[in-house]
Image 1: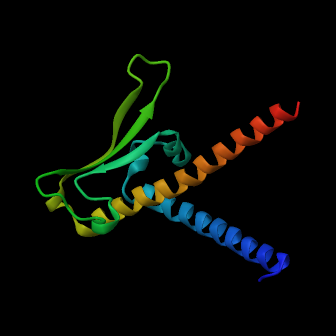
Image 2 (image 1 turned 60 degrees about the vertical axis):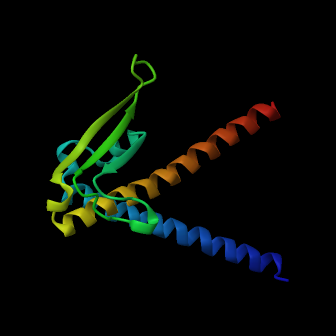
Length: 144
């Protein structure tokens, strides 16, 4: 069995590793934000995280066939915004239209797929932080 100190060191290493990967991911995401010209639709990089989600049409995002072109479809990045005050709560916004999937340069298509995956990776960290804060506030109200 490992000692409590060994387990703590292991946990610390994992957390440090995730934070480094997250930091590196954000740097790469910012570069892709400019490269695939999302910056033409969203002025400030951090504003992309205000979208509920970002999806892709025209290429697969499934692990088993990641980036595979869907013939006859159009390659497009779609952001989903959500406004709980509006009569229609969610709205799709095009962040990038690139034409017929099979005609898009493979390097550009790969950058687009990478952008979506990197966005989702960071968004998942933000979701964890959100729920962690909610649990902490719940715990505070229980202690009162």
